[in-house]
Image (tube, rainbow, N blue to C red; front, side, top):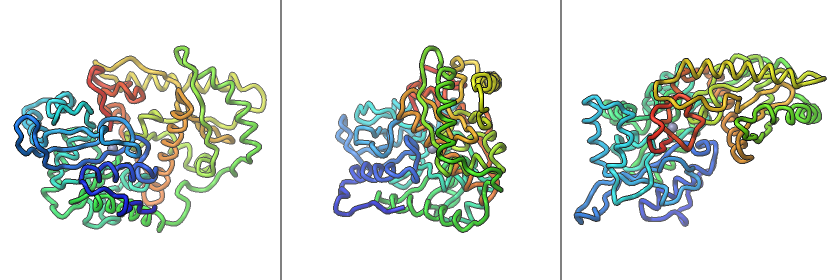
Length: 426
Ligand SMILES: [Zn+2]
C-alpha cells in the first residue's frame, strides 16, 4: 500500500491538508470502503459574530466519499458546544435525540450536516483524527478474541473498544479509554474499524497507513486455509458464462420491486470462487456482516444458491426467493421498533451462486458495482478473521440501528427510528 503523501503537492494550511489527506485515504479501497470512514481537524477560527477566537471541529459531512470530498463537504461545529451535549446525555436524553442537536452547534452557518461519528472525533484531544474501515483491520475487529489480538498486533499503540453502534456513548467510551491510557495513538473498534489521531495531518495520514500495514503483516504471517478445505474446483469461464446466461434474465424480473427493475453486477473472480467453493462457505455466509457500513448495502445476509439446474430455472428461483423473503419479513418483525418505517424491498441485494459467482443488485450499474465491492470487503474480513481466530458477525439487531434516520440510505432503514431526522451516516 503506497504512501501517496507528496510534499510538493501537499498544502501548507491545516484545513487544506485535512482535505488533501482525506482524498488520499479515500482513494484506496484497502484503506476504507466507498463512502466509509471520516476525518476531522480541530483548530482555532475567528467567530464571525464576536470577532473572537473559537475552537472549531471540522469533520467530514454525512454521506459522500472521502476520496472525492471537497472543502464544502466538511461540517464545522463549535467544539465546546458538542462536548457540552454530554450534560444532556447524562441527564437522560437518549443519544438518538442528541443527533438533531448537532446542527445547533454549527459554526459560521455551515450548511453541511455532520456525520453520526462526530462525537468520536470531538472527544479525542488531538487535532487530527481519522476513522477508517480497512478490511485488514476489520478482520481483527471482527475476530472472536479481538481485544487480545489488538494487543498482539499493535502492542500499546491501539486500545480496544467493544462493539457499540456509532453515537454519543461511543464517543464517551473513547474519551474514557484515552484518559485511562494517555499514550494511545488510536483504538480498534470491535466489529467496526479503527480510529487514530496525531498532531498534524501528515502524521495522521502516515499513522493511518502504518496501522493497516501492521494488520496486513500479521494476517500474512498466518498460514493455512482460512476458509478450510476446497470442496469444489472453481468453475471455468465458460461454465460461469453459461450459468449467467441461464439465470440472469430470469432473476431480473423476479427481484423487481414495486415496479423498479434492478441492475445486476456479476463478480466471478477467484476470491469469490475460493469462498463459494470452500468448506466454511455455508456457515460464514449465514452469519452476516461485521462492519455496519457493509450491512447498509449488502443486507443482513446474502441469498445462497447451489449451482443452477440444467433445465428450467424459474421454479428453482421462485422457491429460493420466496424463502429469502419470508426470512427477511421475520427478521423485520423481530427487529422493528414502534417508529420504524415500513419494510423495504425484501429481495436479496447479494446472491452467491455456486458455479457462477456473486450477483449484486441495485438501482444502477454503479450502485450494483459498489454493493458487490462491499461484499468483497466482507469476504476479505471473514477470511482474515478466520485466519487468525473465528469470525463473529454483529448482533442481528445492531446493524439495523447503526445509521440513524438516514433517508439517503434506505438500505439501513428497515428498523430505524425516527424517519424525520436529518440524514446521518457512519
Ligand atoms: Zn465507521
